[in-house]
Length: 380
Length: 222
Image 1 (cartoon, one colour):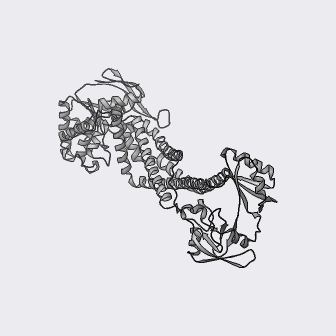
Image 2 (cartoon, each protein chain N blue to C red):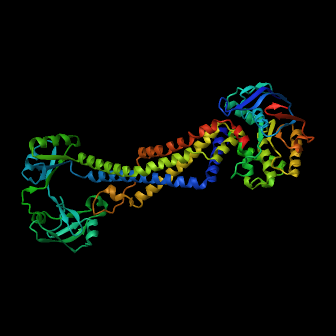
Image 3 (tube, rainbow over the protein chains, first blue to last red):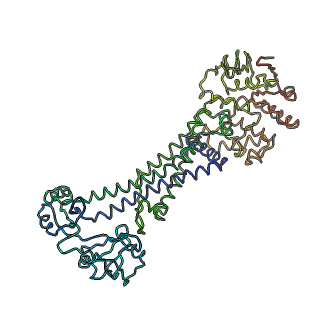
């Protein structure tokens, strides 16, 4: 293979750089560790948020295109079944159904449950299917009795008929599926009223138009489009992500100061070494290239170690360090595995912001020593 | 070969601690000769050598190398010239700690991108000629004074320069090692090298291997 002097020069510079880093092992290992830790934390937050956003989007993809709620004095109220007849007349609406669901606060575990009547295959009267997390928290198995307090204040016993699969744990953590008869009896909701109405729209591009028509026909309702829910979740995760970043900003700032100090300070020995290199025939550009390699090697290694550790932390260990902060303030933390998802732009941004500033911080201060005449070496 | 015309060098010029280390030196140095710049501490001999070896630029005056004026050259050209023409042996040797002797010898040729096998061969050959072959893989900080000096000489020779500059080469050596150094001087002259040394050691400047002694005092020729 023909020798390329430029390439060979880079190899020599990298060899010398690795040797120089090893000569100051303690300092450089400490810097690498702290640097990698910062990258680890930032990357964990980004990876986890990204995965949660994607997970939420995947699960919400099966949600109805339009949900219609009735509003009274600005609050969500029960909606009459008769509204369905008017909604069915809207062009573009393929199907409309009433939905029954509600919240129940269980003081035993200080948690909120969602009671829901499924659209298909409801449990038999007197029986319920519960989310895996709820079952785990209450210690429930098939055949066990879950006794809840009805709207009249009496205990209302349900027998557990089964648990919901953990594949959809994000949505079913606190879910209790009941039949319509039990639901109405438990909450005291008479026939002819629903919690909300869901519409299926033929053409996805007409969803917004259909929502506008719903509002025109039934002005006391609030149509909620699925994309709006997705945007709300995205905003929520963005907000939580931002909150964690703000909390970490103190640590990040401390690291920036530490790294700048380490990178920009040249010890007497380093200055002497630069003088020797210049005296034996190295140009200023050679010395600068050396320092640039030093900065790049440290920062790239720190990035790789930190990012890989973050990947393992999020997708191997479920982001155990700060997952609860990003998932939500709920007692019932669903146990589920996130699908590994990497956003190339995010990696690039994190790489760029973590590698290049440090590399520059290493190079800039050495410039003054690098351009000095090397005769000072002769005087030492 | 090397010509200095009314060369002057000042440090901290214009400031309260201004110092004129060299004050108007005119000199001609012949090729293939061993020359010693002799003088007490503060006489300007080390400064003069840095000017000769293009390690620093004169405040005024001209330095010519084989007829070519190098005093006004940019740093980049000066460095290239320094690399090709001069090899330096520092008083404290200045070997890089943590590197092996062989790596230290190869260091001046790194920026040239010489293929590693060839560079390694060159370094080994130099070390063998200076009786340092068995110590090629030893760390530089493990060497004795005499061994370190020979390693520094090998490093100075790796780019096959025409001129070797040595600052107080016998300052850290005992008598026996100083004589050994003079043997090396003789061998280098035989291979066509030009040697310029600074010293206030009479063992060196009175040695028969030295062709010329130039005295300096307070920045002037004596």
